[in-house]
Image (cartoon, rainbow over all chains, first blue to last red; front, top):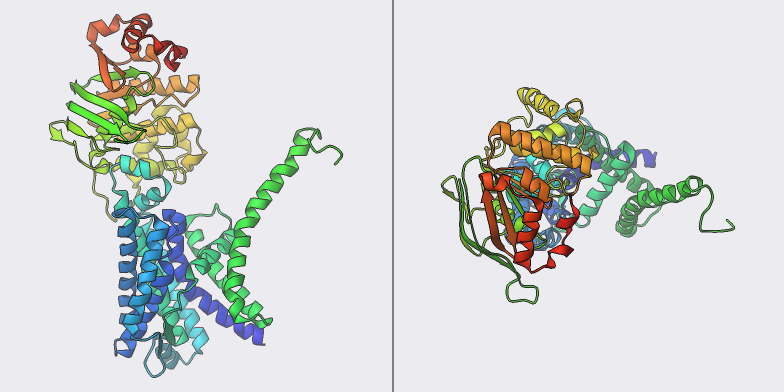
Length: 309
Length: 265
């Protein structure tokens, strides 16, 4: 029974974190940039949201403000990368490190509990009489459905197509009269807006914000994307790809829940995540090499260099 | 039309790799001029095209296009006036996007891009007709990813994209050099056809002397960053490959025989 309960929690957590993974997907797969702002902007969303709610702001409005702060963080990374010509990875790390201090300033301390204040989830639990887990699940699904529809529409528009092309062939985009810097900044802002939104929802759902809550978020986002690709394949349509990212996030949370139930120490969780991502990235490479090697013998008529085998 | 005055460019100034790519270039194009540019390796042919397109900033001089001073405009702004096809077939198209999406991006060159749908129904019909004209069967593969096409198909597509929105000036940078001879011929015929039909002004860099003589109404020869020869009209029509080789040997002091120009027929 413990495992089932843990899995139900894992699904709702996976969906809320899946919004963060969607943000990572925009930069990693569409813009072809590894954006490390994510760890900072996830915590930024959570910290902003918690600080605003404890100050008496409506929890929905707090989420909206969190999205805007996340977009601002992405904007800063984008400007550092495009205008100051700092490599994207370093630009992201700089924003991320800076955000740590900003997050502490926003909350005034390293941890803010949301015990005696309203949250979206508490409000809906009271209203519907459903359990916290179900409410998290439903809220997560609604947000994800709206966001996936929005992203699907946006990347079909003129600006959205131009952003996709920028991640594909910058040279072409410039030669067709478009400013690739604008596209990169816009893409990074939207991505980090999604990440901060996820941070705000996770914070309200777990009932506290912590300045360290974003640590490792980028790796979890990558894990979700890769798990999704393993399941749905790399050649699916754009809409399916977006869904697969969220599904990947849910599966990641289920894996975590199961190994924790099996007695894994929570301290070892980050190591497990790192190994999971490394393995998921390595396996396709090794399989490709093996396929190449195994097709060599028959195609060369058995006359291989390795005599005697 | 195009007026380049006293343009120079030095790469890596003050280092051992210093290279004077362009030295006091002056070139004036009339509307509907179709100019072929030839010259050995490092003569400054591609650099001239890149300076017009704004890939690198020029050190001095001015470039006017249709009376507009574009000397210091960023690449993406000048692109509104220019159509470009590159030597590398991979450079002009987005591999992970559909043929129709690539065309739609090109169709909006120089226009504001908003939140309207990226490809409209009317556009798809226009693109179908244009692709059919290429005669490569691409009109039936409009939703295929461009990465699935061959180099020649991609180059033909890039040519179509460069001229879909009529450019004030078409820049062709050895756009058939990476293709096999048969495909190169096909793409070159298409180029000739489109330039004639749309009455385009064009600059074409080539290594092939026969093509340089056969195509266009004007021929420019470059050597070590200088324009050393500029002929047009009847005089150009009478040129032979031997004349050009002679001209080139005079300018370069005999080193020409090693150049790959001599190998291309």
